[in-house]
Length: 263
Image (cartoon, rainbow, N blue to C red; front, top):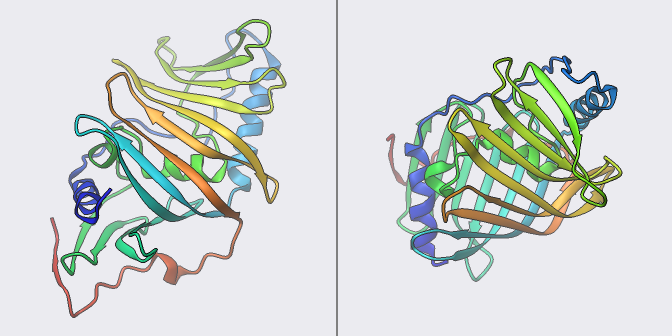
């Protein structure tokens, strides 16, 4: 992926609109099937999410859609509170673009045209950037080994058959499915997460090559797609978990020597 293409993808991020879906922090344990293991799983996921602090990684991102596949080196830093810093790297290993979300504002610094862009937002979607309607906080969860849990009223656990594992299904009270979490036979490894809205599938996240990093089960390959021909994957080469995160790492301080814009 050339530098101008990288910048074009990142710039589109700032025009993404907020989505109506909500990722809940508090889970309501109300099982229509009375399966205690389902409630236990949800409690485990909550504990896992609460144990996450920060993640840093380097690897590559591949995007595909109408314009065909595009690949770029990527470095990222995510915090459990939803903050995210991403740098697109050129062939020399130096950043060609820098994106920061500090929890209140998005900031993009382009080293290509020496400009910066800034916008106020709250947990923005990545749909204009990746073609997939997924929020920044959800990506931080996946990158750090967590599982986003959508607000729900009813849950159930189903066995898919021999050697096929289980699926934990979360629904709203009027039977609308909001999320499906697929696990292996041991109920210890999450293989896939599907998010839904009233009209159907929003995205499917396939989690592969899970490794233990500082007692966190982190997928080193994440493939996210929807029912269309668009999607992206992030493959991790190196990863660090629970590192010290300083406020300066997500500080937005536009260089005075560059011209800026607030879209």
